Image (cartoon, rainbow, N blue to C red; front, side, top):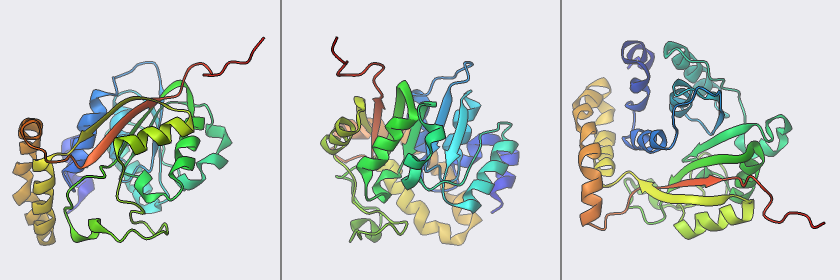
Length: 262
């Protein structure tokens, strides 16, 4: 399927509906916490994947940078952004080396990091580096697999190898684990929630089964994508089915928690 063709035809929304439904869930979560702006706030998308979140943030008015090590993804994201009428930049950057980018320190009002930290062995260093990028009062919006998720494929059960080869190096996080990381990195937790419930997960399994049929499989499963937005919240309230992702809102304090004495 020519994904750029769909973006030309339908605009930004097409970037959210190519793959798993979980991407659209994360955008819905992000959108509620990323108000439109006309003040040129700065945003950095750390591990930006196909660039969908970066493009969405730029459409909402943010001066956006999307980082990834994947040159092909960055080129594709740049093309799609132009088709959507926005101009985020997509430099090639290994997010494990953010601490070397001193020109980024203290430059961003918002950092987003979606489904990336579980790929990084030194997760504490990553959060400390993100804290350095934020302005005082800046927000971190992060998602990562919930430790208690139910596997959607055999590969999600592990084993999780202690090397960074593109796969997950850990199963995920509990809220307490996220809280601990934030405490150690100087970030204050404002909210820990979750997204991607029963219907998103199971329709994603269905989608993965049919995607081997290419465009026909995608068309067949496309109408099902409306179901999670209608039913997942209700279903989660009456069952104990765990959401797939934990979602964090944290901020860098505006003032030092330990101000110097007189």
